[in-house]
Image (cartoon, rainbow over all chains, first blue to last red):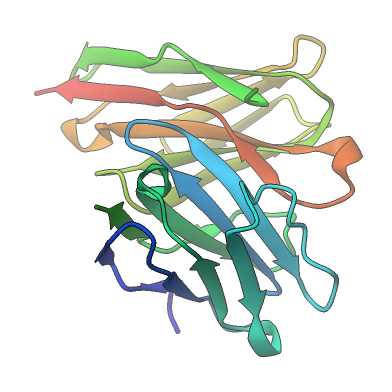
Length: 113
Length: 113
């Protein structure tokens, strides 16, 4: 597609439920990133995929968070047993190689009630 | 702690004035980028400056990099109301082995018409 697409744009879920957030990067971009942004804060790195290499998961805050990238394209971020502190905007970005500028999606605003 | 820290946290200026934002970081980098974020959603890449560069221009934007002081500045000249946004610097950590960018906490710029 022309840009990075994220879905859903908004998600309200009950505490304890699992959620899946989707990112469809720009075709041909080998690098894909997930970040999290709490209200009024900076971006917190979560996970980085680059081609067929093992992902850099060093930013995942707990084992309730996981992500996969199928076929080197679409990525899904899964949060199990959601907690209220998981409420944030989850941003996905892709890049041709990881060395240059990112193109960000519009994000998924997750609210855990 | 954050790799990048922007200063000031908030800035309010009149239309036509110049806006200067600063970014300081802690460890050696390959590249430094500046992004703009409107309305708390997706970020837009503005400019990338490499560690061996000292200054770059793009339209009304001027970015400087001083690796000896581990700092960068973003200057927006002749500001417009449409420049109102949050501005973030992002640095990739040279020693990390992966091309993940760490974002600062941002400067909230308000340009008054």
